[in-house]
Length: 291
Ligand SMILES: *[C@@H]1O[C@H](CO)[C@@H](O)[C@H](O)[C@H]1NC(C)=O
Ligand SMILES: *[C@@H]1O[C@H](CO)[C@@H](O)[C@H](O)[C@H]1NC(C)=O
Image (cartoon, rainbow, N blue to C red; front, top):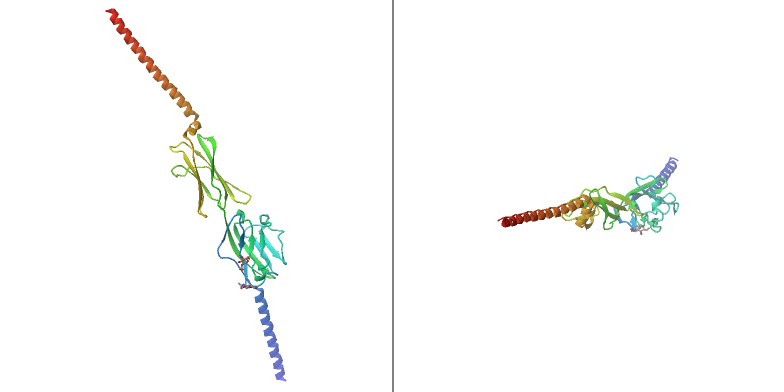
């Protein structure tokens, strides 16, 4: 009797253990880690990039939800895959038609995101979040966009504040570079603030003015410097000295008056000289005839 009771409780026990084992297996199957690159992903504006993200262990993500979003923005959705399809109605508008997952790769737990035709505004931190029922994990990915801009262009704006106003412009930079004006010896010139705009690709357009005065060598350089990218682009211009004289109308007037009076003075001297000589001659003649 007792023996059979014992047997039942043993088999019950075995059942319980099996049940427990099964549950742990299920829960380990449901849990996973989401992994990404340790280092920032550096990418060039205008090109395409793959932002790596994958599951460990290597389970299929086909039936899971995969959400890519920006960190520290209000409506941060970059890409959403849920219920076996992309659901990008609430995507940040600037990402429209530029993002995709790799459908064949989802089976291997690869939830990497492709972003096409990169823009300056794609720079920053992203999160890849994978969810299975109540379980989820995420991974952060930092994207650094780089774009080397155009050779600066210098143009002469006109006369201003007793000097000549020059403008330097360079386009297509990311991140934002510095713009410096320098004289012929490489000394930095005091210039106005740098005007900054962005183009349709969210890259920087920079413009900076300087008012230059005449120096010995009227050579001025505009330097655009992006230290993170280790990039320098510079353009030099030489202004003819005569242009500066028009910058100071009083200088011209002074020069005219000065040269006129110089002519006058010389003229007077000659006249006086002649007059004196004439008088001397007359005196001589008078003396001769007087005798
Ligand atoms: C992931 O799974 C696929 C098969 O489903 C296999 O070919 C691949 O080697 C696995 N990758 C890793 C990192 O285990
Ligand atoms: C995921 O898929 C992309 C695109 O095919 C590939 O470049 C990347 O190496 C894959 N990552 C992993 C971890 O398999």
